[in-house]
Amino acid sequence: MAFIDEVEIHCIAGKGGDGCSSFRREKYVPRGGPDGGDGGRGGSVIFRATERKNTLEDLRRRHRYNAGGGTNGTSKDCHGRGADDMVIEVPTGTQIYDIETGYMLADLESHDDEAEICRGGRGGRGNIHFKSSNNRTPRFAELGQMGEDRHLRLELKLLADVGLLGFPNAGKSTLISVISGARPKIADYPFTTLIPNLGVVRVGFEGSFVVADIPGLVEGASDGVGLGHRFLKHVERSRFLVHLVSASEDDESIQDPVERYRVLRGELEAFSPDLAARPEMVALTKSDAVDEERMAEHLASFQEVLGFTPGVISAVTRDGVQELVDACWRQLRAILDDGEED
Image 1 (cartoon, rainbow, N blue to C red):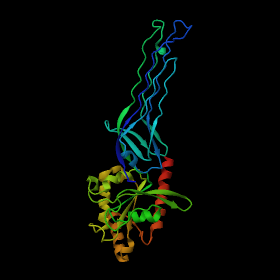
Image 2: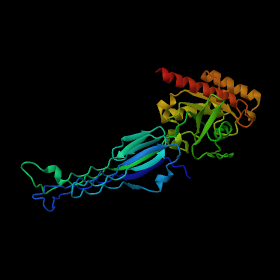
Image 3: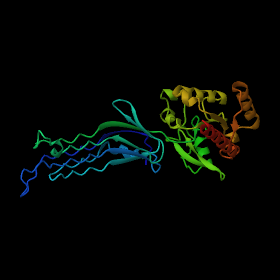
């Protein structure tokens, strides 16, 4: 199944049934009064978040969703039957926007979150409701109301505790395959990762956290260059970020790891200042491809220019990987503890 994170659909709630205009006509019941029943309620269109889905692919195949209408009222004060609501399941993390107004109607952040996006029309009242001392034989009834009609844009933002960012071939996919059960496509060429990948990282018996592997960024990504700009939104929900910077000088056009990090930060700030303000970690990857002397120079450069020393890992040999996982877990626990205190 393809990874689809944006779709546009048309949803129409059901029309309410019409009220009935009728009078009692029974033998031995003279002057029978009005007995028209009410129309049934139209079905609403409801969106429900589920962890069983991770893409909007199903909605791309169908662009129009109509809920059922209520049935009309009948004589003898019989009400029409209300229609069942139409429930559309979407992945957890889906945001729903009204295309015409641009307003966000719902943000389904948790499993089983629901939002009534298009309300079904109310059923019309039968003529039994309009009898009065001045009008004993009302010969009219209400029509059922039309259901709400909306053109919607759905956007999926993945829910992850940690977002992995970096240039193509920085080792993000390899790392997530080592620390979790995710099995992304891995190859030695740019843009191997074409879709975001989620992985669950187990931390001993204490717990787990979710990591998102985002397609590689390039310089100018925030302006639409490359693939990463399309998927940056998927790290907007991440609690903190891990910048993976390749220490190998054979991978990218920018040879200096410090400058690579600066470019990554620049693209992040251009895309979302709020996202750039999130807590972060930096790790130099592919330590197995760099000799110790050169790696020491990179670390000294980071300390001198930026004032901190990044972590060092190799997803191939797994050197430093467990230390990075433990650091992520500690950072996550600290963020959660601060949130509880607030």
